[in-house]
Length: 227
Image (cartoon, rainbow, N blue to C red):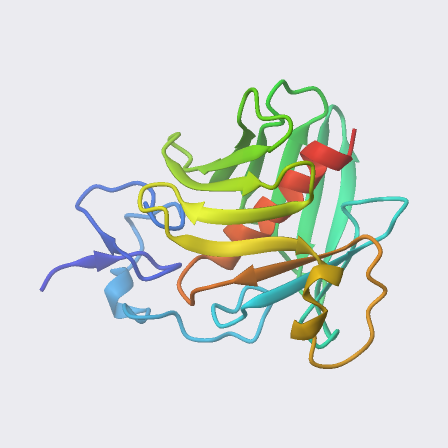
């Protein structure tokens, strides 16, 4: 019918649209029509770190260097890695496949009033920006915004605890939950976890870009616990 679709998530695009409103992907107008190259109903499973069918991620940090460590599935099997680099006055965390391929990066200024952090693709294109809400100390709140500043998701923390509900900003729909892994022992079907400094991400749909949700987890921890 002449419609175009996002090459990353399959969401319909309007004529002249520069970024996908759903996942934040930059639209290359010179590329073939996305509707000819991707499924418009649900991206095909890749088996990689950001497989749209993954609903659990376990982030196992190294206690001396948060931002580096393993990314596991709910059975304790490695599915990727996170690696920190220090670059001038900006921190950079790379999200990698098991073969070392960088699939996304998180950039943050060491000094930032709201802990603003940018999630980018390997080519340096902005996917989303994460900011901490002002005056949210005892129940921290974070926003994930589009490259143009539109609020997509919000994460509200519990009182003085590392526990978050991630919701669609417009609809209020629960998208994901973030917890210390020891809160969800029952979901880990195999393997033994050392629960210290281990965080679990539970996703409730099979459509939200996994890069955005993993970036949300790392950004929240960077702001709160990496002073």
